[in-house]
Length: 215
Image (cartoon, rainbow, N blue to C red; front, side, top):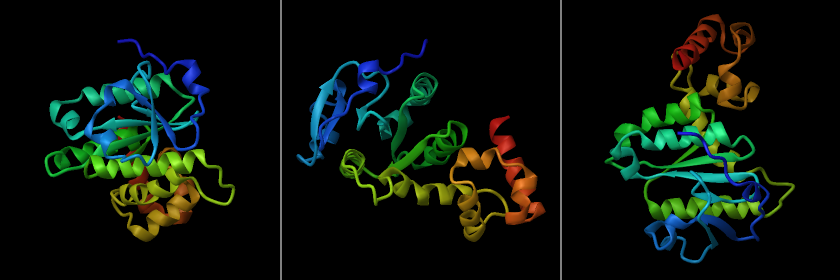
């Protein structure tokens, strides 16, 4: 199926402060009811695979518990977005529950390592609504002294993921992320670049880890 980008008018959209452009399919859902008026919705049918547009720079793709249990259709949705919409930063919000926990590790590696997108786990719709509200209020309200809310929320997720690499503990992971701030940058680092930070053996483990992920 051919990837369809988000309409150009939405790429240039700038919702009023405290508003989100929301896919029509979410109208009346438990997720939207969980916002409890913290933000206001502007419904739009033509968002493609995007669930929520927070601004002209950031959008949300939502993966529910039922999406994960049902199979891999959600993966095709995320890939279609990545291939078609280079102008938007995507935040992939995933329901991590007792039922879907078994799928989370593979999903996390797929979204973050293979596609280079931001992934944030939530336990239920109420937590998702709180997170999205925090993202949209932080995204639309200009604060030159504050760090981007997405980056701040992502840090522990990335740190945990880097520690899955053999030979990399918390200290080495923090040192690596100081030099290579994103998984994408770290995955492209050479042994020569990594060796002064973590030593030759761990540097080879890191390059082998990412090579195996993409081959």
